[in-house]
Length: 198
Image 1: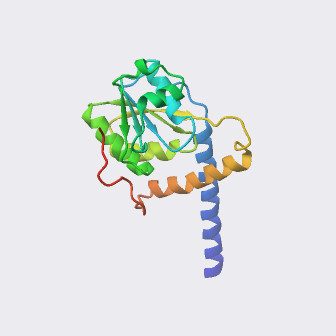
Image 2: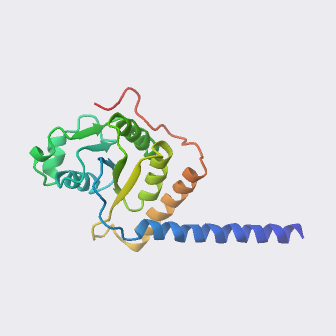
Image 3: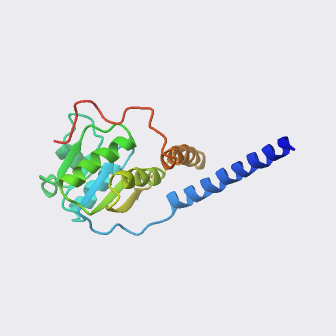
C-alpha cells in the first residue's frame, strides 16, 4: 500500500514537473509586443545580441538611460555602440556600465541600486528569451513596485539554433527558475568584490 502511494505521488510530481515545463516554454517563447517607453532600460549580459538590442532601444528614445549589467571591467560604451551600429553621440552620457554582477541575482541587485538611484517606476528588461522568466522573477524580488517591460532577444538562425539546443537551454533555465521561485539560495557569488556602479 505504501509502495503504491509512493509510486502515485512520484507520478503526480513527474506530471506536475512536465506541465510546469510546458508552461515555462510557452511563457518564454510567446511572442510579445514591443516594449512601452520607460524610465530606463537594463541589459543583462551573458548572450549574443543583448547589448546591441539595448543600445538600439536607447538610441530610438525608448528610455532616457541604459544600464548594461555585468560587463567586464575595461569595457567601453563607445566601442559597444559602434559594434551595435549605433552612433555613439546618441548615447553620450546615457549609459551606465555595471561591472559588479556575475550572476542573474547579481544583475538584479545591481539593477535595483541603479533604479533606486534614479527613482524609476518603469523599466525595459533586455535578455535572451529563455532567460527572461528567471530574470523577471529576480527583478520582481528586489524592485517589486517597478513595472517591467520584457524585451526578449531571439536567437539568430544558424547551426547553434537547433531544436535540441533550444530544448537544452530551456530545460536548464526551467530548473534555475524553479530554484528562484522556491527561494533557494544561490550557491555562487553574485557580485564582484569591490566593484560597483560608476
